[in-house]
Length: 99
Image (tube, rainbow, N blue to C red):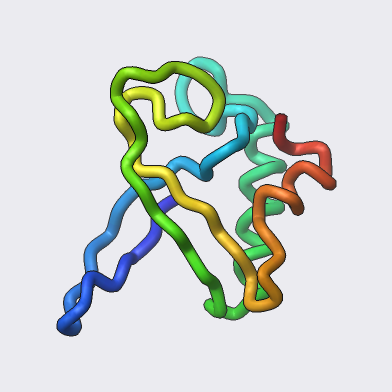
């Protein structure tokens, strides 16, 4: 997920994040799948329905761990919530697009 993050003092930066705690089908590379594109579309629609009103918690993943959503390869991780505190992860699970 690509997000523009407010750094404070009027500064922003764009980063690519992995949504923490889930594994979804791939949308890039050799392992790209139709299911991955469906999950991406569902995510885009969920985000659009919230009209930019989101709460995003970010953290750096641990370089020494391997597994689902734990920050393998030292990626930035994020938790995304709508204005009603509904987590994006729950929505993807309910729709069958995440493990």
